[in-house]
Image 1: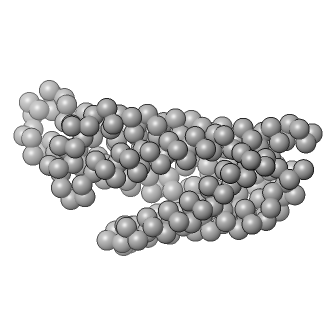
Image 2: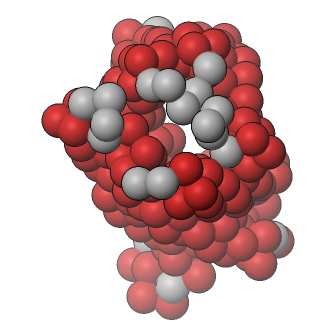
Length: 228
């Protein structure tokens, strides 16, 4: 692959990465963190029903992010396969499993949280309090699905970090930052299983490590593309 095409692929992947960060940030920060009230099913249900357009927008932007993630998986594979085809393919596979696969299917829980509150069929079979509990339960399932996807994504970031570090196309610091992001994702995913009460702390760890690592990579891809 010549340098012009390589730089073009890098910049396309950077633009897609930017879309991912904006969309995922909106879904999590402007939708779920605003709508969901931990441990309060009634308040969560009220927020969902009063903000159905916002809630549905969160699902839509997540789906857009996951579609773009599939593209980033392929483009990063093409950029990094000269370092090691097998390892680059493995990294791409973990990314595809994490968000385009697990993440997309997990959106069914997001959808169900609203559906049980709006459905006449459910309303005829359950009382409002039960429906509210069901809705919160689906959002808790969504959170767990998000963390399961995060474990796969953490492995991807670890492999990606190694590939970036070994590649002549990128500065080694990007590899180090992605490796740090990997540990952030893995600590959050496995830490929540054993220490659910530390959810906020775990979220802060992954927010800082992944935020710095992935945003830096995205900016490099968009602005610089590759070294040569």
